[in-house]
Amino acid sequence: QVQLVESGGGLVQPGGSLRLSCAASGSIFSINARAWYRQAPGKQRELVVVIRSDGSTNYADSVKGRFTISRDNANNTVYLQMNSLKPEDTAVYYCYAFIRAYGLGYREYWGQGTQVTVSS
Figure 1 (cartoon, rainbow, N blue to C red):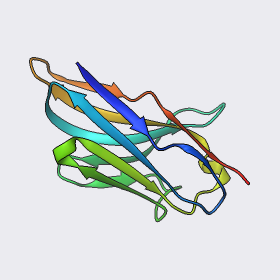
Figure 2: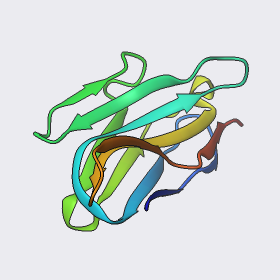
Figure 3: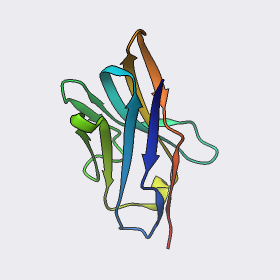
Figure 4: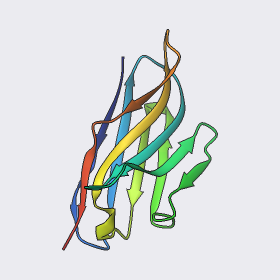
């Protein structure tokens, strides 16, 4: 069984910063890709950033230059550093991973979501 556990959301003023964390645990054989998605009220879930096994990344245009993804492979954890936050960044942020567990093929896994609210 594989689980993704997120932390780090909260309320922040415009221009502020937050760092999200997502720890993967369980019978993990390998991880192909990790990503962060977000979903604002009344909108579809959208990709924020993806980091692949080779370390390459792709960011949504709306967060380029403000958000940075990083990872700690030893602890199967990814981070999302969010700077210069704007009210339009307000959303539930979801961690995603494409993982091969022992005895299974690659599957998609999602975290429970963490609320990020940017407001004065």
